[in-house]
Length: 236
Image (cartoon, rainbow, N blue to C red):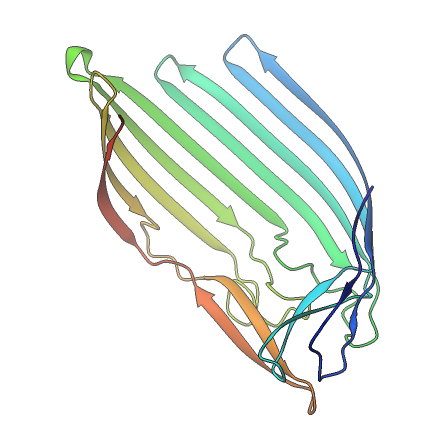
């Protein structure tokens, strides 16, 4: 069980007041197991109920954030993590999360029952491959590939802004990293590329309200496009 304390907004010309205490009750069952010193499995199933969730709302009357409360929510989820040392120099890591997270009750201002919770994706999956290449007396190389899939998510309680802009389009990202480490481990040089296939998506978004007229505006922040570079690290 847990809670967040009630909040009173000090400057609130829009008349939205504050937020009562938020409470959560959760239960989780899982397993953590290693096999033959080469394999690891972590799995869990959880269920949580929220009462009086505090919502962060941008009020255009004051040009800032305020908290309001009221809605309830329910979260059901499954987490899975698996690690395999395929060889002494090659390792694979797999992780996945499946969520059913939605509001189960409206508050006095918003009709959001059935909406997805902000930041909750139905499914996220990632696969990381790490290859270690010993170079003897001249150092070591590591080549890491990270592939992630996200079913998409909304960033606000009204489900007006999402990873697709106005919806929750899915997106896939591929990151690559090739690193050289000196024999004394004092120097690391990395050649890297993120979002290799230049996937377009929004990584966050907000909804701003004009309380006297009940209107709103959307603002989204796009995810980084394809980026690449070289990083040199010195350890003292």
